[in-house]
Amino acid sequence: MSHTIIEKILMNKSGQKNLKPGDFVIVEPDRVMSHDNTYAIVKQFKEMNGQKVWNKEKIVIIYDHCVPPKPKHVINHQVGEKFAKEQSLLFFFGSSEGVCHQVMIEKGFVKPGELIIGADSHSTLYGALNSAGIPINRTEMAYLWKTGKLWLQVPETIKVEFTGKQQQGIYSKDLLLYLLSQIKSDGANYKSIEFTGETIRNLSMSERLTMTNMAVELGAKCGIMPYDYTTESYLNKVSNGNYKPVQSDPDAIYAQIISLDISKLEPQIACPHNPDNVKNISEVTGTKIDKAYLGSCTNGRLADLEIVAKILEGKEVKIELNVYPASYEIMEDAENLGILEILRTAGANIRTASCGPCFGEIGETINDGENYISSSNRNFKGRMGSPNAGIYLASPATVAASCLEGKITDPRRYVLS
Image (cartoon, rainbow, N blue to C red; front, side, top):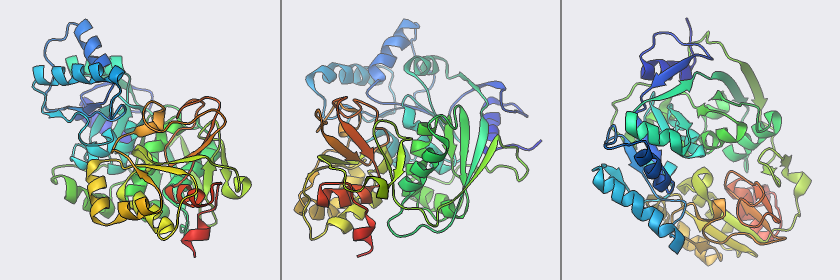
């Protein structure tokens, strides 16, 4: 019988020889990750009479959501740190590294063919490395800590084929937003998405991570990229070669096959108050913007900062631009390459490597009546502050161009100049 990537991964992790969509399996993941919600997981672990975690080498804790912490967050951070010491966990990073998902891949904790479980909805990002990144809730994570086991239902798979050459000023964020406009935020509910096609093959690892990160905005259980030279090249930099890539069989059965030609695509932008409220940028050009956010697990990588620096170099922003690199490694590289200095000179505020205001708890949140343009992944009411404000999601290039004019601006004006 032929199988898709997710079916093969779940067969490997459950010991089952044959699975089909709808089957239930008990699996043991290769890694599990939690962030600032660790304090709640610790509480539930103890309520389950947990004594020792199932595997101290497979649990990773990275603080990023409430960094730097407000007084109300400090005790939560301390609870997790104390627990990590009591359990002799090998991979507790506290708030010293950056955004959890970026740190997970930088540290080599994600490899092809693996099952990575995260107590954060954007754990789908790990699929860019040909793995299955699956989000779960805190209670499920506490149970995993105790037993090392979790049941999952085998999802159906949607194959999305992107064809056509990206034009200048078009990035993978635009591709994902375009897909959202086509199938909406429930279009892949509890399904695995395989991103394929010539366009995907030509994407950098940074751009692939953007797309799998936002697979969850389509309702997906996971989003997975095929293994290829780009995957191998990236992994050679961050981990050893002890892994087994997984590819779908040529005659694998898909719930749906979607083909999208992006050769004539213009920049896309998600308008308030849902990620699938996507429009061509020409439909909203000129909309007033008050603040801008560059960062998050979606678009805070070095390549994103470099794109923005190229647009802003020699110019000055007209609105508040807050930059949150996705990790301290990225921040250091950007500093050494002169990228951060270009951004500072243009008037940007360089902040700590963390989630920042992405979810409305830390940093420069939005006030009543304001509009925020963001490179992040969600724009629900109240997501980045006041529910009486608007959040527009776009590529880093669109964010940068809009900062120069104080209104939504087509980045091709600057990329092509």
